[in-house]
Length: 476
Image 1 (cartoon, rainbow, N blue to C red):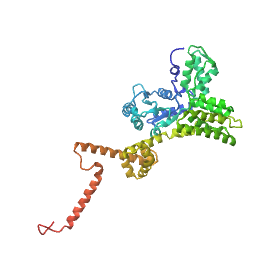
Image 2 (cartoon, rainbow, N blue to C red):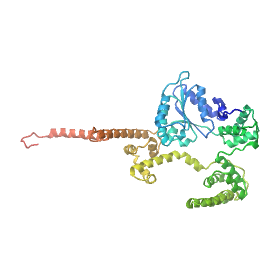
Image 3 (cartoon, rainbow, N blue to C red):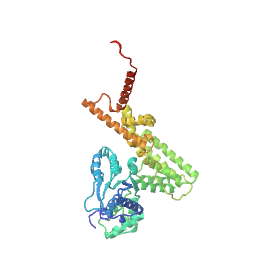
Image 4 (spheres, rainbow, N blue to C red):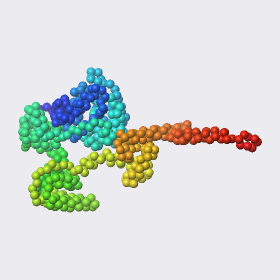
């Protein structure tokens, strides 16, 4: 066995070598093929899914298969608007190097992490590059909803799901055979289960365990569970099946979750497992008492009460049932999924409230509670919407949110474009004012001035027509 990392040594070089994503690979290949006929309708794709499932590998494999050059920006690079426009923007417009088949693939890794001061303006720059590109672009992300809605809407989205345990087990056995390493089927399966669908983690674990050995058995494996959510599935399943108060409570000690999180898992899955109405009533009664203790923890900051809450939500639920139930398909709390889906909406609301609060000299929370609804009503009038958007420098996403529509709406586009023109004119006026070469009134008032001048001319002409001839020196 060599000192080379197995994740790199056995990284797939071609699309056909990527495991567990047959349909996804075909969809990606079809998208790439559309670029061979000219500029594709879908100028960019987002490959998203949990870490270690083959997103970056697929991006490089597609470039290799079609003979494209690649340019990659990742989290270690500075990704400000200027850098993205200079690197990705120029790459998206320029031709390719000699010896290639005419395309250059731009890969932006960790696209869901473009935020904060380090990447200021980066997301908007990416959207602009996508709209203007004549080269294929692939964005890679772990958290799909961490990207702005505008960015998501401008791309074709392809989801990479976690790899099945059986598929990872087969791969681990192949790698072991290539390394002249004997491995028990149970050992390979245990590593695969613990990886939670993450191929990279599974391969790393196999290499770490096999260090100094020529055989891996189940007894050799001491891999810790990586993902607490997978551990939660196992623990709550045992709680629902158990009938011993102490054992059920002891299971919660294995978790890396707080009682605040655990109660949501149990609350979500309890009705899926307990089907008898009386069992459900008694179990939710225990859960409600646990919630009372959690409320006291929040109010009094007395975290010693967590143990009482934990006992009630685990042991209390376990001993409340009178029937034995078969296992059910458990799922994460729907509240978390809703929060994930609405994260970009809440971020937009916060941004709007911050701008309103700053302009009105109020707090963000006050603006969010009291002023946003008022601004929404004003935005229904297109003229007022334009003035407000210019004054508060609203983005397209913020205008769309206030109008309760999509960023692709024509009205949103028109308001945003007019507001930007107004801002530009005001800046020009301020510069001219500072230089002392401006007119007496701002450029934005020019149409009114012309109208007043036109009206004045008409009045003078009418006065000339009705004017009597001057008889004396005192007639005016």
